[in-house]
Image 1 (cartoon, one colour):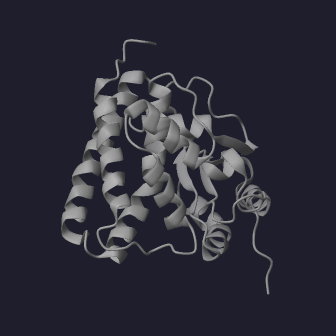
Image 2 (image 1 turned 30 degrees about the vertical axis):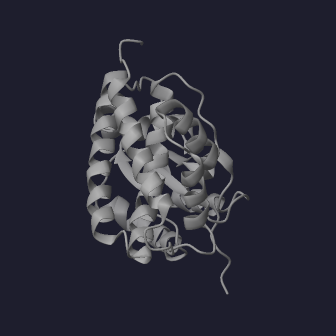
Length: 245
């Protein structure tokens, strides 16, 4: 049986495949904040990566294909791929993502990509409110249809949890608060600031990432608590002032 790839293996293989065309390769997210595949820590943590190249063309994608295909076959997400020009120009389009990566990443190869990159507070607040309001509406739609179906409800919530944690981290930074590195602590800090009860959401987080993943009781009160948490966070972000630089 072939040995699973580690983040270090991925880095070496991408460097060999691209040579001087590689600008930067970053590990970001929970794996960069506290371990993950290939780095010890929680085996459930995804190894999210960002690859910045000189350009993206068929030659580059062809060189990457065997490396990325092997990485994805073992259950890891393929890297986000951007050109250097795209990376330099897109902070206003993806402020949440840039802000979250900046505050939780590890440079694996190439040059530091952050020189000259700034995330504007008003861009961040605008995207954050847009994403949260949309999440509230979609969660209500799902909850109304499937609150009596624990499996469907669990699937819907599990699909949104990582995104909600990212938004909570962004909301905490936007309001000038420290951001914990552990997901459960992010929920607790977010609850204290945005005004929702974090306990059922922390329990839900553990439930959907543990051995009972994919199962909730019909009309599980933790699902309703999660919907309230997202709603309160959207309302909180709407009230945050962006005048502070």
